[in-house]
Amino acid sequence: MLKKVAGAIALSMLSITYPHAEAAPMDSPCQADAHRDLTDTLACYRQTVESQPLNYTMTSVVQLPGIEQRTYRLVSQSWAPDQLVRPDTWVHEVTLYIPQDALPHRALVIANDGTRHPSDGETPRSPNDFLPDTLTDIARNTRTAVISVSDVPNQLLTYAGDGKPKAEDDSVARSWTLFMQSPHTRATMPLHVPMAASVWRAMSLAERELTTLGIHRFVVSGISKRAWTTWLALIGDKRIDAIAPFAIDLLSTRAALDNMYRSYGGNWPLAFYPYYAEGIDRTLDSRAFGLLMRIEDPLSYLGTRHGSRLAVPKYIVNASGDDFFVPDNSQLYFDKLPGAKALRMVPNASHSDIRRATRDSLIPFVNRIQHGKALPQVQAMPADTNGQTILRLRTSEQPRQLLLWQAANPHARDFRYACGIRYTSTPVTMNGAPPRRLVLDRPASGWRAYFVEATFDDGFVATSQTYILGDGYPSTAPPPIGDSCRTLPGRDTRS
Image (cartoon, helix red, strand yellow):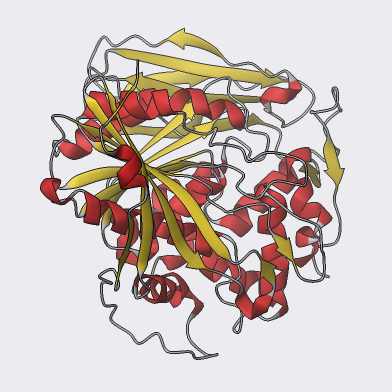
């Protein structure tokens, strides 16, 4: 039985407003300036929101076995660039899971989903990405305080000129359109910007409420749009010293979109529909889209004053059968990322299926960060030799298991789980000195995808990048299979 702590009712009436949260000063001024570099947008928006009163209310305290659970109502910001969106006040439930034996100094922040402003007649929806049992398990098995911030983003949101309440990708796509209409005067318009601010404000709340632990460093994680938020929160806030984004295989965004488009024979996956309906595909070669990517694409920060933020430890977890992204997108960005990094491709998982991998991915990752242990490396080098593709493989630690995963599609360069594609595994012998030499069979027709998965003694799973063998890109769309395995026709990107 859950036991309410005595006095929780009284605590629920306690509203706490601090004059401001401490904002780390940045090297360059953030005054309003139409010519300011857009790569400063995140750092400057953080400076703005962190200068505002930190407004939150404790609503409950619950004792779980070995864990204290505290919940707060947080007002993170008022966001309505050019008065183009409503409601403008963002409100979240921030839940802290505090182990009795919690390690000091560092906490894990989870950007969680939810629907705070549902359609008429519907009820608000609690977060579904990370459920309380998962968060409790992570806290208990890592001895780490876990902070879950709900409603990232607040939704439904209604945008000017549209009038239809929007959520998730529909909301992101609409915010992109409004940004591209006036990039320099609407720099904070892309929805991922206030989403990142939600994370920063939850971190500030945790610092205030976990003073006995001296929390001042954070690992941040999220799924899909909240994984994209994880990257952008990292860019804007130096308190974040490690990240674990799930199912956002879209760094080097413009090139990744091109890889997707060409993989489907000059078409788009069905999951891209919110952006297609908004006409984003018609803007990809425009100057405005390029400016948008100065804010949105994490890789765009390389070579800027914020580029060093990308060097923190990163555990990038993707889905082999993602509804949005093709499995070899990581070849466009992974090797370019500085610093410690590990990749995991989860076999036989769709975009939403990635939820099942969060617990078992985060526990060993957070434990390694907390104890200063390096991330394991899986180094794979493919080479074509005498008509064969040879993969030479090295690992920085001896794995307890090595598997070669592969999937074939004789008709299309399409590996979506929704299209019936399934990966199968073969054990890789671990005898002999490295590098290990694996032969990847090139299909006589169609395409075949491969990746190597290494499982280490602490349960950490790392994979190679995914390699797709076949005859280049197709010239026709994949054959549709049911309602979920379809594509959208390609259009001119120069509009």
